Image (cartoon, rainbow, N blue to C red; front, side, top):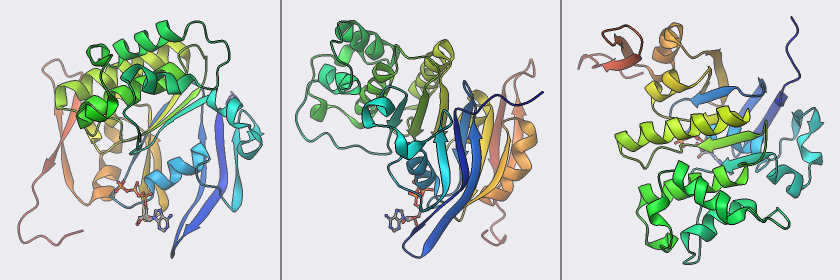
Amino acid sequence: MQNPEPLLSLDHTKIQLGPQQFGPFSLTVQTGERIAILGPSGAGKSTLLKLMSRELLSRSGSIRLHDRPLADWTLIELSQRRAVLPQSSEIAFGLEVELVVALGRVARQADSNQAAIVSAALQLAHASHLAGRRFDTLSGGEQARVQLARIFAQLWDVQEGLVLVDEPLAALDPGLQFDLLDSLQTFICQRGHALVAILHDINHALLAFDRLWLIKQGRLQANITADASAIPQLELLYGIRLRQLKSDCGEAMMVAPVPRHPSAPAP
Ligand SMILES: Nc1ncnc2c1ncn2[C@@H]1O[C@H](COP(=O)(O)OP(=O)(O)OP(=O)(O)O)[C@@H](O)[C@H]1O
């Protein structure tokens, strides 16, 4: 059976930043697919995400969204199809939380549902209790939840969009990380959105994603299914050994790093 037309496709896309080249990347994202990008610090994960979001422009190769060059989309069209959560985003003014979330919907005209959507998005992001607060007075984890609510609000009433997020869970405690991962899953599954997320937690990637893109030194090292068969490639990626753990009923899979012997050479 032929693959359906991809939602997003990169064809030999590359970019040079300073002395380093990133790519060429030839990758596809299908509607509804959940892809985790993993790799060591400085490997080029954010650079790849910025190419996909059009924050960075590739000088060679092509990127197409819905089979149309990404460069040809207007900003308004893009904002109604794909949402981006960068690694850090500065909000310069002391905006109220609801206003920050509503920023996700600035491209909508006559948005009569805005207040209801903002409220529902805050609830899904476990951030309803922050309504009325000034964004710049929130803790890092609270700000992360509000930013995620902004992404939810942006694509709340869209089907088959694209969500690109860079370390969305990094500022959250372990309990909230699982809650928000669950919220992200609910959000994208109900709408058929595709999700591409940069993560540093291998377990989050294995538990909640379909595929892994492993990035090292600016290159794609592997594009593989997110299951136990990925463990050897993950060990190679990070230069660590992993041990697979299973729950009593054998369903949930977690991995734990095996400490290196002190005399072992660093990767
Ligand atoms: N505009 C730029 N000019 C020059 N070098 C850059 C630029 N942007 C990024 N780099 C460099 O490219 C490399 C990859 O950066 P990138 O942010 O993509 O890494 P990453 O894999 O997301 O890392 P981390 O996990 O630490 O966030 C880094 O060494 C970074 O310093």
